[in-house]
Amino acid sequence: MWLIDSSIGRKVVMSVTGAALILFLTFHMAMNCVALISGEAYNVICEFLGANWYALVGTAGLAVLMVLHFVFAFWLTIQNRKARGNVRYAVSERPKSVEWASQNMLVLGIIVFVGLLVHFANFWSKMQLQEIIHGTNFVAGQNGPTDGAFLIQYTFSQWYYVVVYTVWLAALWFHLSHGFWSMFQTVGWSGSKWQRRWQVIGNIYVTLVILGFLSVVYFYFFKSLC
Amino acid sequence: MEKNISFKLKIWRQRGPKEKGQFKVYEMKDIPTDTSFLEMLDILNEQLINAGEEPVVFDHDCREGICGMCSLYINGHPHGPATGATTCQLYMRRFKDGETITVEPWRSAGFPVIRDLMVDRRAYDKIMQAGGYVSINTGGVPDANAIPISKEKADLAMDAASCIGCGACVAACKNGSAMLFVSAKVSQLALLPQGQVEAARRAKAMLSKMDELGFGNCTNTRACEAECPKCISISNIARLNREFIAAKLSD
Ligand code: HEM
Image 1 (cartoon, rainbow over the protein chains, first blue to last red):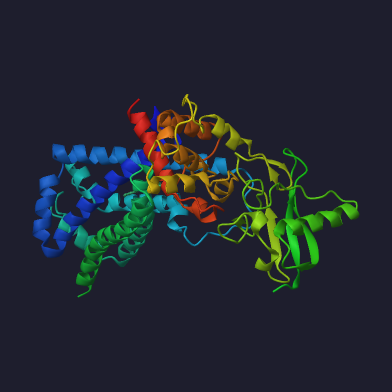
Image 2: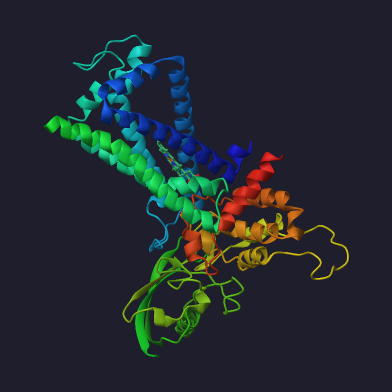
């Protein structure tokens, strides 16, 4: 199967799973921004999704994408380190046109993954998980498994979560500042003109998505201060 | 303007492929800045031979930037600090008096060290043998203008064909990937009607040879393009990806 046993095929898996994850992030960010306007409206979306069959299918799909992206990331990185050989250069300089992020995708990905675990503990385990197992392990004050607005308010009134989420989103920004144009290059939808264009489009797109997420974090943080 | 400089050379010495290597430092005195880097190494080797020591082994041939034989990872860059130039086109005026110049061989599992600064680059020949040619019977020689080719295509094919196969892309790549080389060799033919007949087979054969020989996966860092002495663009890699994916999808 060429997606597994050729180098370009393995990269196509990274590219397609990455693209699907970016689409999901875009949806998630748009949904979060509703919480800037009204907590009640946000909870309506939470109820709509909840643990309904389509939300569960979506979650399972995302889990598969994440696992594939994660496993291939380690697989590719191990192969690449082996291809580099055992002896490292004594002196090595990064040319100006090489982005820092492009050479540190695995490290950035690992930070993103750890952030994801924190995020699951903060939200998913108190919401969809409780609904699936019919549990009641809620945070004091949380009004049922679909009270997302309360959890946002609760989480981001604690300053250390604000720090953790900021670092997490910054790592994601760096990952995607390279990943965005790279995924087009990988599937061959690029050239000398489009490479530059994708890079610019990617920087704008990714910055907007990350700012969308950050705005909710800081909106609720500052709200908790007043 | 010519002047003389003195500097330290920190050079990788390794007696054979299986032996352990290490750096050795040599003092170079009063070298004119108009000396080319390889001439400077010749001067060093003369000194070593006169002192009864083993000369430093390094690859070189045409010394005018077209054969692709010279290599050397100098101060953290394949072919040294100059851009768009090979080591043989590098002059000592690029360096400062009193500097330490570190010279290493290409480091990649695909290019094992033979001795000192010389590496085995036959892997590239094997990739070429896997499909980097046109083998269809073209019949008699057609008139030069019988097959129209647009100026744009001709230019792109010529740009790709300027690859000299030196291996700087692999040396520069943190993944030891040969994608820039393979993509240039695929592109120079895929862009022209003569090469299109076998394009799908070629892309598959050359890529699987590259994978088989232990080169890494491309992660689009662009280090290859930045260090390539012929400034081959990564748009060739996008073309190779396109050719390869299309070939696999139509299998
Ligand atoms: C929401 C989460 C994530 C998104 C949206 C995402 C997106 C992307 C995209 C678009 C690419 C470019 C693919 C290409 O070059 O063709 C990429 C590459 C990469 N990702 Fe992620 N990623 C995410 C999480 C992770 C995680 C958790 C890890 C690892 C632990 C990871 C590791 C990598 C690595 C190592 C690469 C470079 C692979 C290569 O170029 O060969 N990513 N990612």
